[in-house]
Image 1 (tube, rainbow, N blue to C red):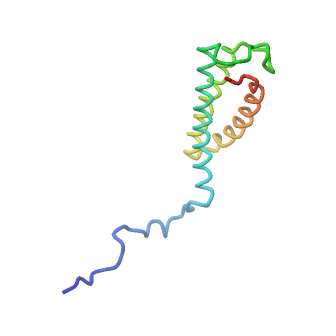
Image 2 (cartoon, rainbow, N blue to C red; image 1 turned 180 degrees about the vertical axis):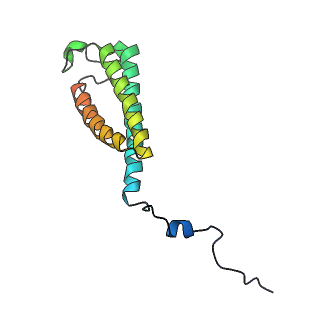
Image 3 (cartoon, rainbow, N blue to C red; image 1 turned 180 degrees about the horizontal axis):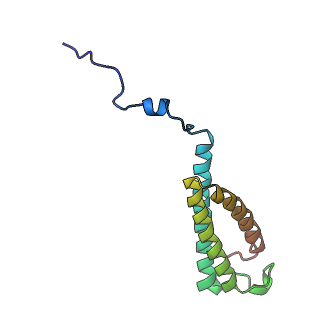
Length: 124
């Protein structure tokens, strides 16, 4: 004898079908991608900041050769602080916070400008 039981799924899907909240859109994947990119960017900024704080001799260019004549320790603190803010904005972006979206866009632009000002500090 074969079991000809119900072909209904074991999970109750009526809550999704009759929910008043909107379902996930195509932007959901892009938001997750953007938040993970911000996690990586923030981590790289933190590492770059820690290297600049603790090892001034790591970079081949002296402070006078940079676009902005600032000590590497000051650059390191700026990179460290910005990296931590970017990681926090990435977490807020993943949580769906609207303020984190605005902050993420602003921090991404600020990070690009900051890295262009720091571009001469190549570690070769």
